[in-house]
Image 1 (cartoon, chains in turn orange, brown, purple, red):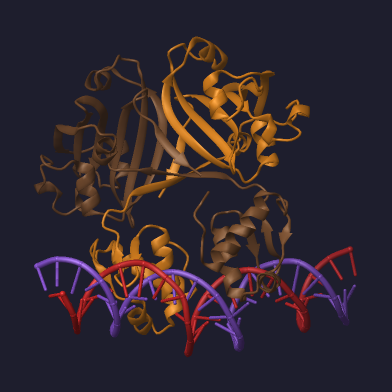
Image 2: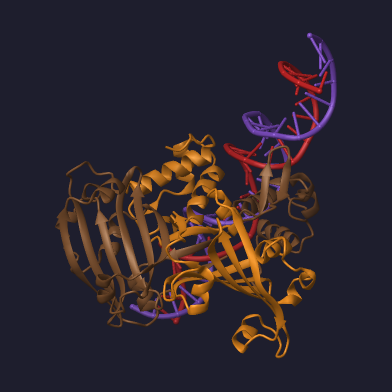
Length: 234
Length: 234
DNA sequence: ATGCTAATTATGTCTATACATAAAAGTCAA
DNA sequence: TTGACTTTTATGTATAGACATAATTAGCAT
């Protein structure tokens, strides 16, 4: 199955996890204390502590001082998805990547967008729309607004050689993001751009990216529903 | 912003993260060694070690023995979604939850499904289809296959009082899962069940759940695209 | 019973030390 | 230059001991 873990906290971690999965301890049940487990495994308390702490980080067990450690009674099924850079995603499948900027203008955004970017009234934002191709087939339509105040140097960037997403990742690598996924109908314009029928299903990702208090960019990414899938594990 | 962290490894963690976000250290750059940071922060190396280890777990930095610790050069934008129990998700919005079993039968599955469930040829599987309502509006159509050998007691369960998903979470709480999200067109039957137009967009989640080597269940969850959104953060 | 206080206890963190280990860097011979 | 061996070094793990802290439990007074 998995390669043999060597470190002893890992062995203990895996052993405890096995016992939980096999219901040796039921959900809600309190497992032995660190001290007791340290004796059982013949190691120090810190080693057991690390093993259990990692289980707690994953939401497998819940810990409370004095009360002890118990198996989570209703673990929520959470999953990690990784939204990779589009170019790499496409090239990883052996396809060729290309994109075009449809338009790029600095304009005063509509009120809803102004609020999202927390701009003052009348302040302009950068509006970019582009189309990404996989093997020359339209793959993603991108409609993006950027708060230029948050990204020095963006006014000088024409995005001819690098797409806005990759440029922004370089410019603000450790920003936080929030995604909303949904299925929508393709409107006429989007359908034409993606080369699909008007009314075809779209897989839509809306992403807001910020650093500290500043919203940097919000973007709507539209994929033809049948050509795009998003995977997640665990 | 966030409440003041007390523990010193947390303070160091946050301080290092700040320095990375503010580009005090550039992506790809090597940060000072544990020993040096321990002196700088006036603490022991173990404390620094834990701070950096947690950054490494989050993918903020990359560590290699002898080479040191460097700021991740191309951090992948990963996000955690939590697929909660449908009933709770609906009730959390203040709506009422109800569901009906459309059918439940033990049949030999089609070949593709047989392979997914790793059943022998001719072995039957449990096929359940049900419909979930939010405030009496159709909200999700569920089409599920279960490997009965993996879930003792399921043959006696009629799912009149508890839905299959919640029952399975109770029965196999720490199973692993894999999700595929996509947008699809509603076929005629699904559209009718969900009370939407045939050809309307569907947000589809396909989930495979397993424990150890056994695939327990695979399920296709269909939502009207306009009424369903999936959120993710970070 | 009820409410307050003090004792107890399991986890949470920190330290100093030790040794293991992977990998870079250095050394030297063919 | 190349390859093989050795040294060095930063991280990885483990330990024993200490104190901190939250929260349950027990004891006490009303």
